[in-house]
Image (tube, rainbow, N blue to C red; front, side, top):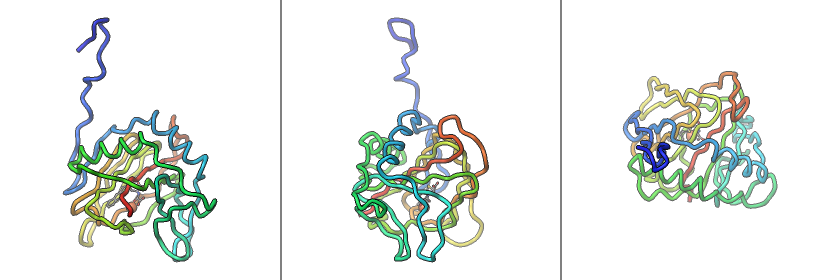
Length: 216
Ligand code: MD3
Ligand code: FE
């Protein structure tokens, strides 16, 4: 389809297809407009810099995190929780940019979750070698709300352990992918394998992951 000037009308370019990875897990490959999202991440990180937090067990996470939204996920010797304030500065977390919220709500809707109302966006930064051990996201109040994840920069191998024990599935995640977890998958254990070294033209030597949640 072309416009009056003969140039292609990009408005009708089809959006990427949704792929069912498992029950309740939908991959939207290439969904994330990185050139729009990365400057918003940089602004959040100016106000609330990435930092490596301590787990309740006293280990330092290899992943550096920050947050935007009315609450942010934090961990320290006292446990995991959502907090209205950045513990480093004592100030409220930066607001969730409207554009980020709109993208997350759109991704959720494409995966069949209408009415997603995220109040927290946890932003993870992985340098080569950083990993996330198998865990459950269970610090939120309403497990009927999905979690929406955006991947940017270096690729990752996502691990999905499923409801019972046994072997986990490996799902490759690339720059620009969105993945939505809801329904039965919402409480599945998952993690990220150590990030391989590399250089990405937009992020440099790191992977950025945004997870949008309804925390409270
Ligand atoms: C599956 N982050 O921040 S995002 C996390 O790529 C986290 O940085 C990973 O796990 C990352 O907690 C994975 C995808 C994700 C997020 C939440 C889930 C997968 C999930 C909740 C339930 C099941
Ligand atoms: Fe998680």
